[in-house]
Image 1 (cartoon, rainbow, N blue to C red):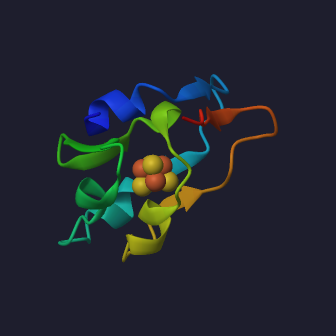
Image 2: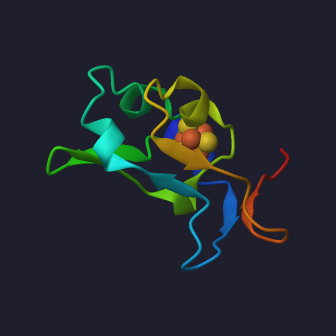
Length: 90
Ligand code: SF4
């Protein structure tokens, strides 16, 4: 299976209107690395109007983006109970 095919096997219970990831784009302006664009295994980060956006609803909850963000611009917590990714086995 390709990565896209594997990601398509996951299910998401999206907590509409309550993102579990937020970005301080003022801090992003100070960042020359922008590692978030490269490390997210689901490719959820992108640049828009010289800022960073994240499509949080497809988050795999690995936490990598929070760790690599050098200016500390990402606020991240797990989704509320009952929401977020549902991994399928096999
Ligand atoms: Fe991507 Fe992992 Fe961050 Fe979710 S926690 S946005 S999957 S890097």
